[in-house]
Length: 497
Ligand code: ADP
Image (cartoon, rainbow, N blue to C red):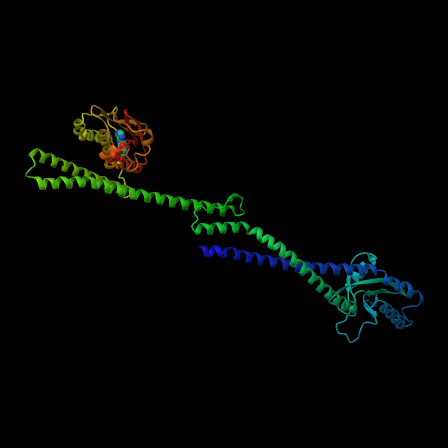
């Protein structure tokens, strides 16, 4: 167990760190890509806006003084050659083209006739929208030297000698692209490096704090669990409801309570068992010692003892043998009940008949003690649904006790009373009674009210009665006043025929 608790936190921390690093790297890549894209678009848009009028200027300045076409209709190459060279000398990023009204390139100094990639046509749609909006919108057009790319441009229409077309200036030409590419690379290298250093430092600080806070409760729980597993049974997670993982914290506390509760129970059961063994051996030893003493006396002094003395000694031995067999019998019954080896066999029977039988059985004993023993029964015949032999055993123990703890001239009554779907059974005596503070304990084995009682019984009778009640899902109540008497009352389910 300690192995799992030891490795739990670092494993979780490792996973959290991994997730955090992945998150930071992804954020960095997204940040650099978005920044690059936005910066590039911003730069292109600015360049296009700044140079929107460039093509217009060409037409205004150059087309006034000289015709762009020669008398035979061909392009005035010297004029354009100079013009284009001049312009591209000032701004090395641009490329100037002369287009006809279908978008065909009439002339450009940058076009290499051997360049297989270059096209001879430019799409007119973006040029027309550019002219219509006077360059106020961001529009990309074809690049004749790189047909796959779309470039920012400036364009203006001309109409000379019955010919019309466009002056088309690609603003981010090949040269521009090369320079921009190198610079962009450097810029991104710097931006990336800066971003990586900054985000790593911040991410490390935030990550450390976040993981520390996230695993704080876990550390508390881990250390408490370890404390508990190392033997400190009082270890509990403090304020479990405030924990981020309160279900776990509460479950651990409940589990710890159950474990300690069970341990306490086991210890008390163990204590009771030892107590029982000690008491049983004591109870068995006393009558055995008496028996041994009298038998030895009879053996050694048989010739010197009178007949009466011999008779008396034999009677004492006999009563001790009775006591022993009764005690052993009770112990046997109790241990069977305690080990839950007894399953009640419930059936309908007449509790009235059973009571009559028991009264008859105990009549002799009661008469010997000058006690009036009678059955009080307002109803003619009460039927119950229970285990007849177990109920008989319980009633026997209760009647026996009532007679035992009642002085001569007293009264013992067994009353049966139907109450709804139950039959109440009440054994009342006018005996010595039980002090209130003792009443709660008399059903526990070996609890005897006073030392004098110890001499009279085993202390198992009522414990057996209690077990029998439990097997019938009912309870027994005692009402008693010292020197006035006691009543033991319990209910059994009535049987409706
Ligand atoms: P015991 O064998 O000692 O009678 P029980 O379990 O039958 O053991 O009874 C437990 C104790 O309860 C007795 O020792 C006695 O002190 C008390 N007790 C039980 N029944 C009565 C009663 N009818 N009147 C007074 N005390 C009683």
